[in-house]
Structure formats: structure tokens, C-alpha cells
Image 1 (cartoon, rainbow, N blue to C red):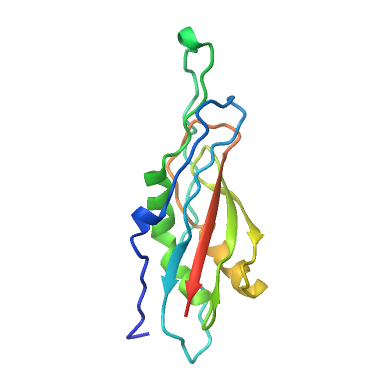
Image 2: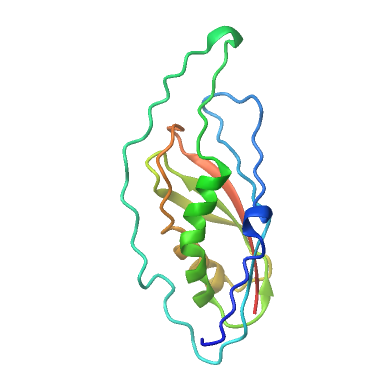
Length: 166
């Protein structure tokens, strides 16, 4: 592990966020990052549990959505911005390196972030060539991300692709 190299190549530039310009309050916001690239040399020993040392985040009070529709007649909650999502995921992503020891794969997850800042679900939408044990492990790590509370009462859906190369 001495020469473990984690290269999250310009993660800030790789995360791409898009939002629908007009959406109803019940519509979930989409934040669509480009694949995160994680590169590390192969390991010769079995990987430890990635969740070691990670704490589950504590729920915080949701931010109430009480905007006035004004002249346009339509207002939608803002949810989290790209920077807030990136910061929370960056804090746990390095732990996912313990999930595999060799190969190259690109799983895609769909994250549901509760308005209280706690991850409600992590669903694999595309295994991207990864063994199910690896994608399960990555999903368990992602559940530990601690997001700030937001104003989308039903939660916020975020597609999250990850490219891993050993």
C-alpha cells in the first residue's frame, strides 16, 4: 500500500452537473457527474473492509421549501449543487479502493440523498464489468457520504458513474 496511487484526475472538472431549467417541486434534481477515475497498482493481498473508520452520517433537519412563486407562477426547490455533492462523495471515495484488487470497470450508481443529508439508497444501474461483490462494496462505502441538508422533501436523485483501474 506504500505505493498506492489514487488519481482522481481533475475530479472537479470531471464532475458535470445538469439540471432541468423548469421542474415541478416533486421532480427530483439530477446531478450528472462524468466518471470518476480511480487508478491504483494491483495488490497481492485480500482487501480489508472499506467501511472501517467510516461513520454513518447523522440526519439533520430538512430545509423547508417555502418559496413564493412570484410573477412566473412556478418555483421548485434547489436541492444540492455540484460542489456540495462532490465534497460529500470525495470524503468517502478513497475508501472504495479497498473494494477490489485488480481489473478495470465502470459501474454507475444512482444515489438518493434525503433532505436530511443522509443517503437513502445507493442503487447499481450498470455494473460496468465489475464483479457484484465489488459493486456491493462500493455501494456500502457510498452510503457513508455525509451531505448537507437540502429543500427537496422527497430526496434528490444523483447518477454517479465511477471508473476504476488497477
